[in-house]
Length: 585
Image (cartoon, rainbow, N blue to C red; front, side, top):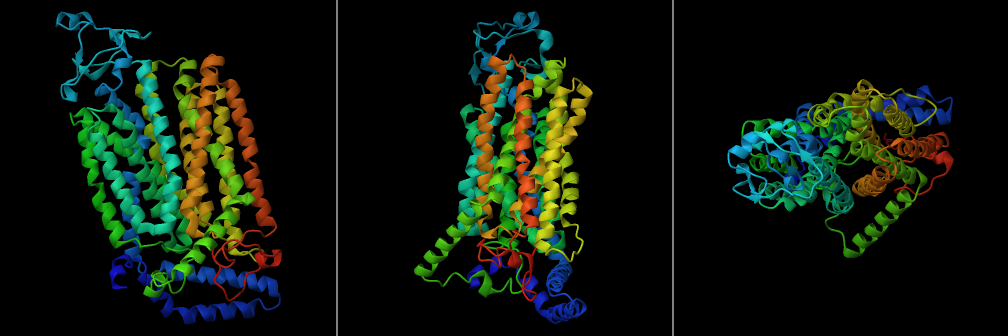
């Protein structure tokens, strides 16, 4: 037992405070029963809501300093390490300076460069890549004139790039995101089985491997894909493990959770800083080597703040005691096998439900819409008459900078989920699902609006649409995380639930490549018909909010902690919980 004491630092204060206030909670429960004794059903529901509100107020006033330190630490982790890949636009600038994939371009030199002894038949040396020589491809159909060159690139202060290089870098980003999303499912299974500590230690190893591989990418460009896959995978796992910190904040749970997600989307700031340091002469590989020190704060939070397994929700009164944290250590092999079979049955029951299935469809279609927008971003502005250089240097960087809006926008969305109004007609768990339903409807409406904007031939409208794009992306992820952390779904399988959603997102992204080929080969770069197909798919995905509404209306929203992990209950049991059992939201 003593060996696990280091993992109990954030857990012990809750049970201590609840023990001191147990008598007060009982008095509140008795008073509420007396006030509503005229109607048994209404009394049960109102008592449940008031007891939950009392528990949340109790939780909110205990050990504020430690909870706040944990929150700030987790927030900084999300802001600096989780969504590094979102700053891809800034990373491509440094990769061009390092002449990655420049052999795809047919570079035409100016007369001044030729007079200095350089010719097309000679190899080109990039001084920033340790003397590695590369030769430009002469069979490319793209030839760049001197006036198209951008300043501050390796060859005599001139940067050379072409469409082939741009397409290769965009393809690289797509491959990295798809592979990462596929890997979330096995990592989620590992996290559910072995807990938070082992998952984060695996994440530290993954992050170190990725950053070290980036330091050697100058001599082996093929290392870019595995390196950035590992870095982005480690970041997303950090976000998932940090979401449980929100369970310590009771009535502000979803606000805290949404703040972490907003910080995740704002992590492009790190790549922007790397680009700024690169302007001052610091190499990309050096920046990633410096990023390796991220393991220090990650290890500190893993050991000092987070538990060994997970922070449960709803938070039990006895949470934090050794008996609860280590209750499964002395079980026999037969007991563990029986528990594993029960867990698998619980996961199967929930994953085969229509509520979970339509959530997968909804998230997959939303993610494919985002994927197609990113793929056709340059094509959209080219058709509107924008210059290619202007797209790369202005519009793309503006869009990447606006991703930092996720940090102020996400807490507002979380506050909408935490906003409560005690109702005598439904228990808190159904009220919470109603608020999640509102956010799902809002996300679907934003997706439909963003799919209609490309039909408007105005660059100003498209730039204004950047803000709607960012709000929609943050809202979609907040919806998914709040939906999957609702008590209807057993928290023991959260990693698998999120992994399934991202796995479906990878499959829909792969189908996006088929749409892209259709656009460029058969539709002459006209994505009008693809947008129409996308609108139809978005309308189909609206079945998900309708399905949530139907479950709320008929009282099918359950509490997994009270219903044996998702077994069927009668409508009466779904609508009315036992007055003496703690309900959760």
